[in-house]
Image (cartoon, rainbow, N blue to C red):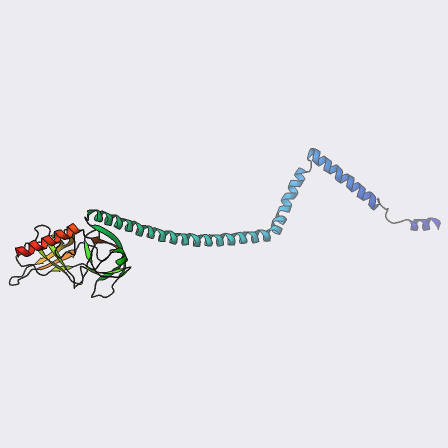
Length: 298
């Protein structure tokens, strides 16, 4: 009975080391492995194998962050590209405007150089004026310039451009003046044929590209291509400046006068600057003498 009772009092399983002992053994084992791995690298291969096994899990965990980063970067780059494209487009427009302005300035400088060269050929004092406005009346061809009585501009003063005679001043204000173009239907200009000195009157037709010479006889010596210059008669326009080039000459038997049309030398439709001519006293005296001689011959 005693033996049976003793056997029943014994535990079924034998108890192992205590928890503290187990922790101590694990710590010793871990330190030993760390020392061996540090000195001899025995666990490198195991670490490599484990890294391969862990990489898919790491990639799956990192996937949402990678996607969000990629999407954010792409949207940011797209926004930056759109903004850069808009900025470049705006800069292109600004540069195009600057280039147009440079082209306009280049043309203006060219016109001014031509005017200065023309003024060098003028024996009288000249003044450069800019056109401020053009008369919109289709039956009147007038311009407004930015020089007036303050600049000694006077009514009847001649206007030139780099190519020829433009017109004459009809009215002056303190700061501006009104001028009538030679193509106006009410304007008449004494001219002569540069080739032979034949004199006539060039009358405006209301068309800036055309002048008429209505007082030339049918047998007058005038041809297509003849250059018409100012004769100086009347004292308004200086003598010898280009006025127009003869374009057509029509002669009808039985008609007393030829039908002569000429094209103005000045660029009446596109001028921006003009020359105001101040004739010297000597030039005015020469014109007066020529008019006297002309009257004596008649």
